[in-house]
Image (cartoon, rainbow, N blue to C red; front, top):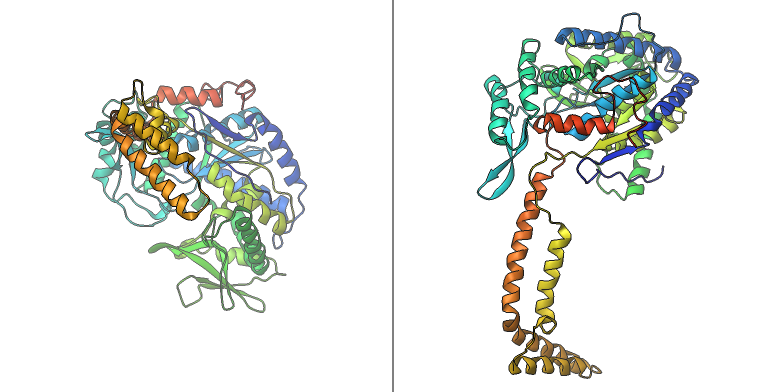
Length: 549
C-alpha cells in the first residue's frame, strides 16, 4: 500500500481524472481479461459462474427498476451477458456536479467500448440532510442558506425513508427559485423538480424520487445508463453467494480487514478509530461481519454479528440478544443451502446490505469490469484494494477516479488570500517597523525617535540585562512612532476589511459542492461536454481523444 493524495480541483471547470479518461477503454479491457482468468471458489460457486449470474441478475433488476419509473433503457432481454460493464454509484441525493460527471463519463466509456453503463443507486446509505444550501444576497453579504425539501426523519436508510412532508417536497422548486432570485440563468431546478414531483406517482421513497428524476433528466440529454437500487441487488442470489462466502470465512476476512485498516491508518497518520472505517469488532465468540442488517419496522442500520458452530453459523442483529437465524454454513461447506435461507429474509422484513467496502468489492469483482470512483470512494478503495489482494488472492481490477469543480458563475471579487496576507504583513510591519513606512519630509521629533531606535538596535547585547533593556527601548521607540503612521494604518485596516469581505463572498460564490440543481443548464452542459465530448449529443466518435483528460 502506497500513499496517494487526492485533492479536489480548485479552479472553476477544473477536472481530476486519474488515470486520464483516455485510458479508460484500455483499463476496461485489462480488467475484463484479469477477471475472466480469475479462478476462485465462493463456497461452491466458481468466480466465472458467479460473475455471469451477477451480471444477468443486475440486468433483470435494472429492467424492472426502469419499467417501474417509465425510464428509457437500451438493454435488450437477449443482451450478451459477456458484454463488459462500466460501473459507478452514489447515494440518491442532490449532489454536486463533481459527482454527477461520473454518470456522463461511464456513458461515454461504454459507448466507445461497446459496454453496458451501470449506475448503482446506493439507497442502503443514510441521508446527510434534507436541505440544500442556496446562495442568497443578504444585508450581511452573500450567504449560503438552507432550503428544505423535506422534514428530517433521522438516520433512516434511503430505501426505507418515505417523504415526510409532501407539501414541503412539492414547494421545494419554487422556494429554491425564490432564493436564487435570478442569480443563475436557466437553473436546472426548473427542469428537474417537476420530474421529481411526477415520480411521486410511482413511489413515496424520497431517494427513489430524486434518483428517478435525475435519470429522466439524463435521458432527455441523451444519456441512457442502466440503473438499479443497491437494495435490490442485495437480495439477488449472486449477492447472497458473495455474502455467504465472507460469512463462512469471517475470521480470516476480519483479520485481513483489520490488518489492512491498521496499515492504512499508519500510512496516513490517522488516529481516529472511525476513519476511514471502524475496525470489525469481536463480542466474545461473535464476530462483526462487513454488512449492515436491520428490520423494516425499525429501520436503523445495525452491525451483523456471526458465530461459528461446529457445522452451522448463527447470525444476530447487533443490539439484539436472540440469534436471528442459523445457517448450514462453515469454512469448508458449500453455501447453496445457506443462500436459500438468506433468500427468505426479505419476506421476514429483514434487510441484509453491504457496507461501503463490500459495496465496491461486490461491484468491482462480480458486477463490472471497470469502476469509476469519486475522490471519497477512491480513498476508501485504497483500503479495499489491499483487502481484495490479501483475501481474494487477485491483483485488484483498477478503478478510475473522476471529479470536477464547477462554480455557479456568481459574481465574485478579483482578490486572493495572498492579497489579504500582504496587507496583514504591512499592518504588522507598521507595528514593529514604523520607521520603514515614513514619507519625506520627516518632522524633527519623528526623526529623533528614528535615531533613538537605531541606537537601541546597535546597543550591546552581551548580558541578559542589556538584551532586556534594548528590547524595551525598541518597543518604546516603535510606540512613539505609531502616530506618524496612523493614517497608513487606517487605510490598511479599511483595505483589510474590504479584502476579508471579498474573500468571504468568494468562498460562498465559488463553493464547489452546491447541488447540481442550482447550476445553469447551459453552463453545466457546456462544461460537461468539454470533459466527455460527444456524450450529450450521442456522437460515436472517439469520445475522450480530444478532451485532454
